[in-house]
Amino acid sequence: MRFEIVKSGSRIGRRNVLGVALYENFTPEDLASLPSSIALLAEMYIPRENFKAKRGSVLVVPLANGETQCVALVGLGPRESVKIDDYRVAAFNIVRTAATRGAPSVSIAIPEASEWLISRAIGEGAALARYRFEKYRATDEDDRFAPPETALVLCGDHKALSEGFTIGTCQCYARDLANEPGNVVNPGVLAKIANDLALEKGLKIKVFDESELAAKGMNALLSVGKGSASPPRLIHLEYIPKSPVATVAVVGKGITFDSGGLDIKPADSMLTMKGDKTGACVALGVIKAASELKLPISVHAIIGAAENMPGGNSYRPDDIIKAYNGKTIEINNTDAEGRVTLADTLAYACGLKPDNVIDIATLTGACAVALGDTTAGLFTNDDKFGGEFLSAAATSGERFWKLPMDDENLRKKLKSPVADVVNSAGRYGGAITAAMFLENFVEKGCPWIHLDIAATDFVKEPYSYYIKGATAYGLRGIVSWLLYLAGADK
Ligand code: BES
Ligand code: MN
Ligand code: ZN
Image (cartoon, rainbow, N blue to C red; front, top):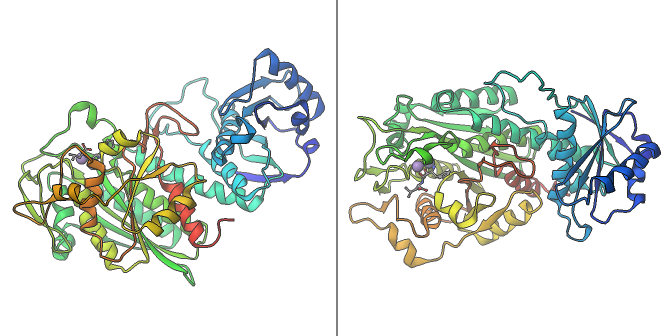
């Protein structure tokens, strides 16, 4: 999509869809960004349709003649409590209005658009508005969906808009991957997709197959994948800019389908488990964004790809497995498989001696119970790193909430009589004990964050700028932190 900037509202006309964002208690002057004839019409419709500019609301006013099909009035909510994310939602609603009508051009009049973070949010919202996952169904006869080619943004910042658009597009790339079902994307296919990305972006890539994994002693990742006809893969991508200011590893959980294994899930819980590779998809999206934004940061994306299936060769409850870092794991639940794969991939990531490690995983239903399905859990061994991440991600529109890791009595539940650690410590505090399990495989002194995106990864009821399906939750948060590290978050 091409962005054009205009500085005055009078020059905003002649677009297929005119989008105007308003605060609650707006005045007629706030409509001054519209050409006067249209402003008059909008003013007429506002009381008739009882439009109050509530946060997230949309009023589409059709126009009888001329090139402009309609005016989309979108609400930002009260001016006093407006958040950056409200501008992102407003941009989404405007561009979505255009896209569903197949309008080739749209204009966007959103207050404060000259501010860097607001322009970036508008760019992100615009990219997210173009998203659908329709490749496997025939289009309906009356479907006019086509994302607009150009957007005219009143007083926007061109660089911030395109930066936001890149981030949003990378998120949609990750959503596309996450939405693919398990019969299409298995570990080998995920490795092929990573390889295509590496070729396109000029990234370094190494893929370890099952025999290389065995030679390296990555028995944890291998064990989880044993029940599947598609063997596991470790995927390691590397983006290296000219003079990097830091080196970061992003480790993604890549379970292409989680049936639970021998501890098989009930039918209802197994649905959406194609999304159990979302962490991996986000890691790919993050490295794609880093390279497209030309960030001065070396980024490693590390994915342990496996399918968790029951079968004659599956790993079992009671198995004792030696992980890559030498620690042994007693398996007491094969459905706690994500942390077992992360044991090897986290240890491998630490071996690269990065400045920071972030892992992202659809790890525990307990996290969704604790925080709901619109906030991700954050766990860290380094409060300074955790605090910096949270403040950098605060304007990303993604919610993260820190959960504690200092309860030594809870940690005792991970003790095993036969191994160094058990893989599941029961229901209570399940998201925390999962994070505590992971900490066993993070090198001492390596600043690490674990993001639990279970349930935030998948939307059942559309909200904000998400339609039903994969969100690739965590991508904007991580990229915001990379921009902060690069000193580029204005
Ligand atoms: N992939 C699931 C977690 C999950 C649950 C993701 C809901 C998205 C939505 C994970 O592998 C899992 O099965 N976790 C178990 C752990 C338990 C056996 C200790 C869980 O949360 O029930
Ligand atoms: Mn599981
Ligand atoms: Zn899982």
